Structures are given as C-alpha cells and as structure tokens.
Image (tube, rainbow, N blue to C red):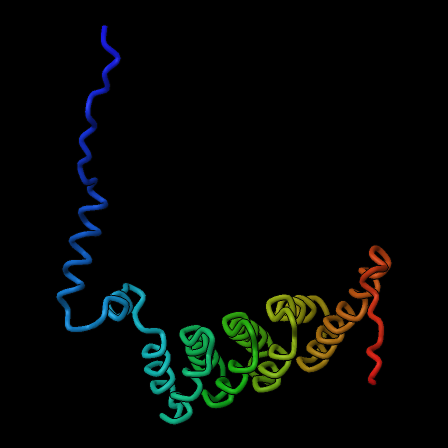
Length: 192
C-alpha cells in the first residue's frame, strides 16, 4: 500500500464566484466601488433621507442641511423631529433644536410624545425641555406618567419631581464608587 497523496483540486466556492462577479460588475460602473456599495445599499443615504424628512416637516433648507450634516446619526435626528412634530403640538423647529442637543434623539422623541400624551398637551414645550435635560429620557417619562396616574399632580409638578430624582441619582453615584474603590479619588491639578 502506497502512502502517496492524491492531488487536491481547488474549485472556487459559490461565495468566491459571487464576490468575483460583483467586483467585476462594480468595476465596470462609472463610479468608484465604494460609492457603488454606498449608493446601492438597502439602507440608502442617511443624509439624503434626513434632509428629505426635515424639509417635509417644514424646516428651512439651510437649517436642514446644517443639521443633517452635523448629526452623528442623521436618520435618527430626522425621526426625532418628525415624531415630535406629528405626535405633539411642538413645532418642528423647536423639536429640531431639542433633537440636536441629545445623544439619543429617538429616546427623546419617545419621552416627549409619552409625557405630552399623558399631560394632554398642557405642557408640550416644557416636556421637550425636561426630556432633553434628563439623562434617561425613557425613565423620566415613565416616572412622570406613573406618578400622574396614581397621584393628583400637575404636569409641571410631576416633571419637577422626576427631574430632581434624576439629578439626585447622579449626585450619589460617585460617592458609592469611591467607597468601593478609593483609587478613583481625584486630586486637584496644580498650576505651575
């Protein structure tokens, strides 16, 4: 019996064949492959979608262009503005100002719509400001809605209570960390 190895024939797999055909097809386009992949992606161009949605909401073209260009997630920014504009009496321009100033615009929109529907639009612009100031907008809206369902509180009073609770939680967080790990204690910087 011989220990001779048989030659291995390498045939391209289906995935390799598709990748090769795709690169050949893309190479024949009059645009760069990166542009082709971006342009033909199922997701679309986020900046184009953002501009379209902001213009549809009544935002001025210059403001829409600047806002979409500056946004980290332009599609989320536009969704925030449209949700607040369509779900509350807050004007699209005011919604845009709030949506640009938060890290999670979709959470802001949900918070504003929830609080506004609970308070029956008596404090729409205030709900935008309170939700924007909250570090956890969804928790904030749950607090406002929950307290108002069980306790006879005005809209502003409930928002004041919930935003104060938000602030207190942050004030106590560092002391708990320092008790468990004293090496985190900060030392003041001395200027020379």
